[in-house]
Image 1 (cartoon, one colour):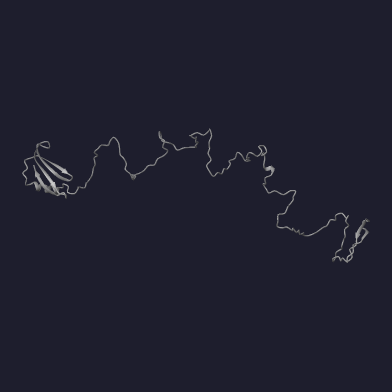
Image 2: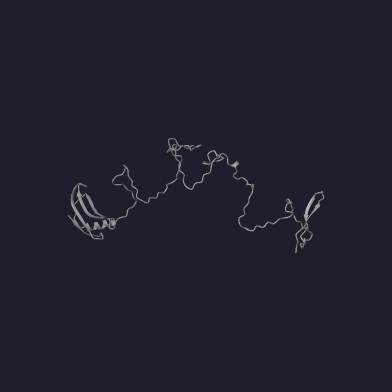
Length: 247
């Protein structure tokens, strides 16, 4: 059983009287160690420790409270020195330190510009413009060599003072309808009327229906002379001559 330590006094190397305590009986000090009992009225004694110290936190990894009198700020942090003249308007206005340099604006929609200065025609300033021909407002043109092709998909009206009801046309050849009065048909006609007694005449007038000769008029004294005989010709559905009647 251990007994309470006993107090004793001793004089240190400087001649001062000190009070100490003996180790309690039944207590064994560790190897190479001396047990020291500190009186309750003893002031704090500095303790030196070399090497690393380990600190145990019982509630880790919960959030730990940290108290610091000051902390370093990163470069360019928003300190009072970097925020000049904001107190003049109470922070109601946005301040740009590099004004009147060009500022970039980003917007997702069109921004209307209005004001009393706005007019319909805006002035434009140019260093130079191409020269215009005298009396012309055409800056330039393109010369086309040859005849360009023009394609029109719809009807185009042609009007003007030159337009008349009957238009002259020029054609190298034109197709004839079936049974038209060709030289071969006229030979057949001559043969058909060869046996008829036709009085003396100096004018023959032909009347047509489609491509067929339907009347032959004989006159003396020219186109406005006296009719001496008239032939009436009839045709079938295939435009073949079927009969000749003399009047």
